[in-house]
Image (cartoon, rainbow, N blue to C red; front, side, top):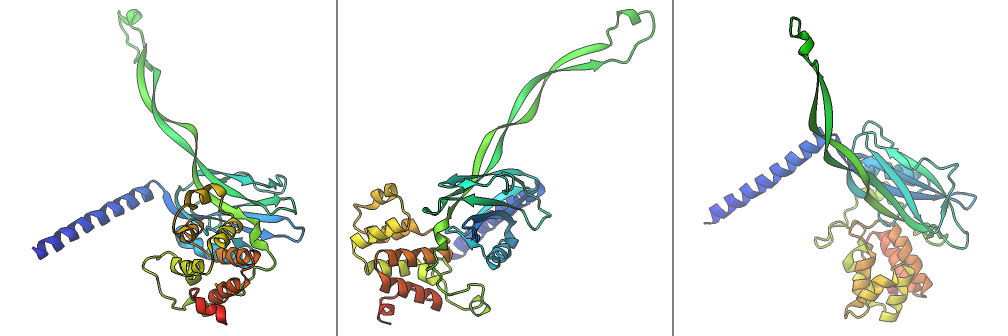
Length: 328
C-alpha cells in the first residue's frame, strides 16, 4: 500500500512537471520571456529625482539592479516583480503620485521589450515640492487584444472562357465569408510598483553594502515559514519580537510613519493581535533593504531610538532583532 501511494505521488508529480514544461515550451515558441520589472530612484544635486524603470530578463535582473545601486540609485520597498513579456511587445509606462514629470528631459512613455538587448529601460526626471517627498506608483500596462470574427466580401475572378458561351459567363464572383482578426480593446495593468522619495533621508544610512563580498556567501539560514525573506531583521519572527517591545499606541504611530493607509489600519484596529497584523500588512513577501531604512527612520520619529539602533545593529550583523540587543 505504501509502495502504491509513493508510485501514485510520483506519477502526479511527473504529470505536474510535464505540464509546467509544456507551458514553458509554448511560451518560448511564442517568444514570451520571463522577466523582472523594477524601479529605482536617484537624488540629483538640484534636489530633483531621477527614476529608472527597467524590464530585465529573469536571469539578468539581479545584475542589472546591482549596476544601478553602484551608480547611486536606490531600489524601492518592492525590489522587483516577476512577469512574462513577449519579445517585441510594446508596453506603456505611466506614473501616479504627488509629483510632476519633466517631459522635456524624460523618456517616452512607451517601451518596446527587446529580448536581444541587455538594457530595456526608460528614464524619468521627477519634479516635486521640496516640502513634500514624492510618493506614488509606477504602472506598466499592456494592450489587450480580442479575437473576433468579421464578415468580409471577397471578390473572386474566374479564368476567362472562350467559345460561344463566352458572352454569358461572368468572370467576377463575390463571396461573403468570415475571418478571425485580432483587435485591440484597451489596456490591462501588468505591474504596479510603489516609489517613495522618503528613502533619501540623510539619517537613514545603516552602513552596510549588501553587495560587499563579505556578505555574499554568509550563511544566515532560511526560515522555512518565511522563505522569501533574505534579510534576517525583516523576517516575520524578528518583526514580531520588535512588536512586543511596543504598546498598541506606539505601534499605531509606527504604522502611520510607515505609510500604512488609514483604510488598511481600520481593518485590523479591532484585532487582538493588532501589532503583529500591522507588520504583516507592511512587509511584502519578498522585502529588500530599503524597508530597513524606513523602519529605522520611523522608530526614531516616534522616539523609539533604542529600538531603532537595535534594528540597525541587527541589520549590520545580518541577524534577527532580539530584545537583548537593546542592552548593548
